Length: 385
Image (cartoon, rainbow, N blue to C red; front, top):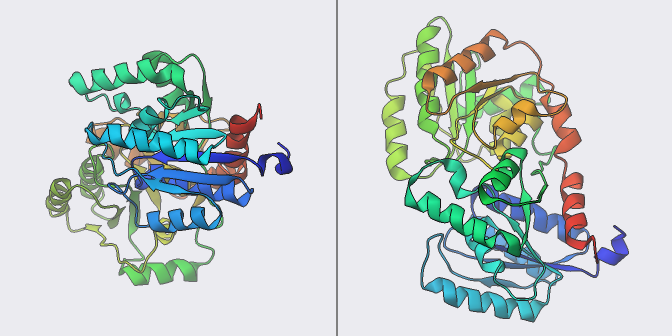
């Protein structure tokens, strides 16, 4: 679309969680919209917040946009009614061309705004976790009831399949997440890699199995810890290091610490030091592993691809997508969710092919660029404007 035409446009972004992948998605989307002279307004909640939230709200206000803290949680509460009324007032005050809600709570609220052009990105439906029970039934029912009130954006074909089959959406737009290829890249020289290894106190002769993700039910890192232990036991002549970047649930964190104590002598959990960035961690990994129970479109896998790493993933919604990706990823191995033997087998398959060079960065650059991400959102927002 003509840049002069869209520069007069404005978008209201709304989200309750401002952490992890949802926040990073909004952070990138807002920055790209502002870069292309589109005014951004932002309705958020400071309850679940990223340490970069203040920076984002400052950049939006510096670019002429407005922000509002709805101060809501992810669970149902009487505060939601007050938050909705404030959101409606904010909408009529800012008069955006489009309102884009992210994740279930904000997605529900924006779909009730009268007269707005509404877009909803679920960032993985709650029902994709297959937890069962009344809560899953309720969430699926609410999504089905609210579906006609907004255009839906899915992050992967797996998420779109769920939307069509369970939520019964007739049509959804797929827009993949994007990654910055200048930031996420392989180590350029051996010296760069050695410097990161030395800073972490890592053994440069050890094989480093890496994972990036919060410690939560969804990410299920315990599955990786069990599989890692089995890999170490199966190859006593090799040394392995588990590099897990992530924080979260205190109870689950304690369980992971206890699991780490069961690693044999040739296996080690590497503590993360604050001076080392996440992108630097990718540069010393030999393989990236994610053992989630479900996903929308995880940034971590895209970052690992941009870093040209082999992938070991669970065969769950949001990750199966990569198994069927056009052109073919040549170093991707799958295990079954909840089955540590299958993850161990996938790690073993990676190890047997460990010297084969991946094609993952090249493929990622053709599909997950910031330019494609922005253009698809711009087309969706303003195609009739």
